Length: 557
Image 1 (cartoon, rainbow, N blue to C red):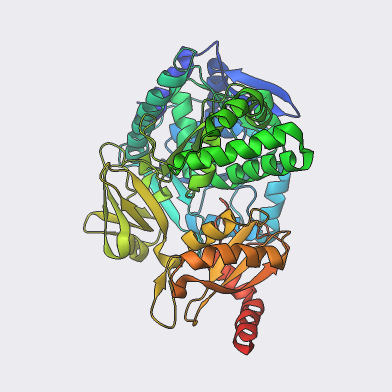
Image 2 (image 1 turned 180 degrees about the vertical axis):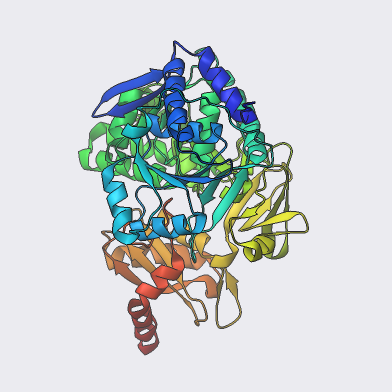
């Protein structure tokens, strides 16, 4: 007898309840097309018949290599419904990285979005497992009976490979139980957010989604939106996110800090270039807003904020993110307090989420009624968080993964005494809201023995150097700190930023020298992870000569 995974059954029930309502859409070149709940179920059914015809066994791994699309969602649901373990593969990663993941997970079948992706794999790995295209999958196979063996709560449903900021990416196994638990928690929090801020019936909220479904948090969000019967519109061209967002005019959007920082800088630059009355009001209102939140408000500040709210901010909101946006949900990395306050100034709430793939994407979620700037909210109900050695965040609960695929030693390192060791440094206040300070592995140990988290220093420099794309602080085993700065920025501007930042730091945390690199680090160059995090070890290795030059020049001076 066929038995669906409980959370898959719930999603299918909700899709059936929305059989005549559009539930999933794509935007291409400003044109939106989509499917109803019933049409999505039909796509899933066709995909299931094709997959069932391949004679795969329960628990076999299947790769899913494609860009975000409605068909990606249908294949993902179909594979899980057939009792198979989905291995999502990010289409923008290099073929060599993708092949390494496939060799590790040994899929019996790889579902490819197009021939170009297949050909890239074949060039690196001629002996790759069988591959099929979406066009074949959605042709379906007649006469197939869908009758899969029962899938238990402990059964793996996916293996998601971590970004790999240092070393080879590891496959994180997530089970039906961990995913089901997390979907219940995220649905509860979204219900709390959306029922309090939406003017439309619950479940009909409009979501704009551009983050790759291969990322755990993005995937969990997608499944939660389907479970809530929200309308999710998928961006199909990352170069057109800003334009597409205005066309879709969503109620909510998932984001990463990097995009929000870029949006904020773009507004500043455009208004500065335009000048005039609007720029004057905007500049004064920004100053007034900052003073208000520092408890140093001046007479006249309320006037400038009132003028901006009437004349400037509505136009910025409409041009930046459309007319309907009620909240931005931000994750993957800590968001600067300055950027969070900036969007609040425009009348847009920014809620933060913190978690890792190993915690089924989420550990904390901002309570929409009690947001604290610079913090990522309290632990989700049903799980525990505490601090360990070096203020490392430890997590325990039903959301914790059972282990890494084929890596028992690394599993033991990460999971012991019932707690998952996140590798993140943090702190928690009396209200239970957490703040993320940085990665334990990123700690710089100077020759003097001082231990330094680079992230707060990097954030402070970026705050005073908006022209920069990235800042990487260097200094492990050295006598002092230096920094690599990327982007179109002059040395004088970097020095000016350091002159502001350094005086507020103890001597051993001050950056004494820097190197400017015009080209930003990127995923394509292999110096960023697929979700935009710095690969510090790779950067240090590839820029060894430039780093040595920084220390030689400073010592010579």
